[in-house]
Length: 373
Ligand code: PHE
Image (cartoon, rainbow, N blue to C red; front, side, top):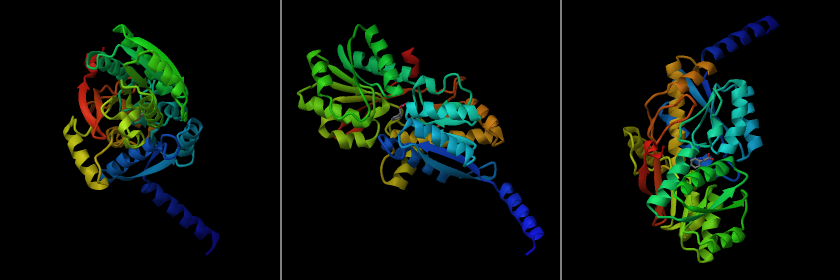
């Protein structure tokens, strides 16, 4: 073959590839590392959604997964890799707020829309045009947790365990404390770090303070350890947390130590069927995976479906048009509820309260977002 011919064939191939170019979406998730349970759950939700809706604007959708190893630096690197090397037009992720903050810097600079399923710290979207979320924010869940603690559980003295390495935990602690103090609740605040194994020093402080609740605003590994060590020290008050408890791993790690005493704020529970989509989603999930869906699977499903809807509404896969279309989503019927994205890229949703009965996450009640103001 002469060079001219090779050249012509190459051009033809490139042209036909661009005609059938797929819509590439990045999924930036903690698939390994400290909070890998969260990443795995989101992935299950995205995979199910992708099976149900695999095309948009007449093109096939490709989901490119990228592991952040549950780390901030890897989250920023992963976002850059997805955009610069893979050429994604949008990113779903990350899950935990600190990682999303790192990734959001990159997405915002490169003008690529990013939609996080579960990052609740207000700063993740604040002041940004390209970053949005399908979940409520921490002022909402922190306030809901304090309201529930005071009004339903009659908590008067709380020791708040703050993971100083997590933006999520630092913020959530403050929002809880602010509302709890309004009701004259007494607070002792103690610190720990992600990965800590030993909590006896903080726990003996909590016990001598006379806490009727220990509030751990971090993630499942450390929550489980705090609960177990509290129990072995004879503590018999409540353990309260935000959404960071919400992975089946918490139950496996904590066992009996959380039975009947853990209450936490959540985005979703399969027994709280909020929209017609919630029921359909839960049934399809059970069929595919043989288990009932977890919260982060429902949020991952919603993030994917909402993003694809935004691409369709935009009638374009240009990142600018998609980012604007995400911000224009109104009354989207998701598995986790009806989602309207506000001008700041946040969703306003009701807060589910769950507890543990017979070693299972059990739906307790719903606190409406409007009642929290
Ligand atoms: N809200 C948590 C964060 O921002 C992440 C999370 C969401 C964890 C939902 C569990 C369930 O860090």
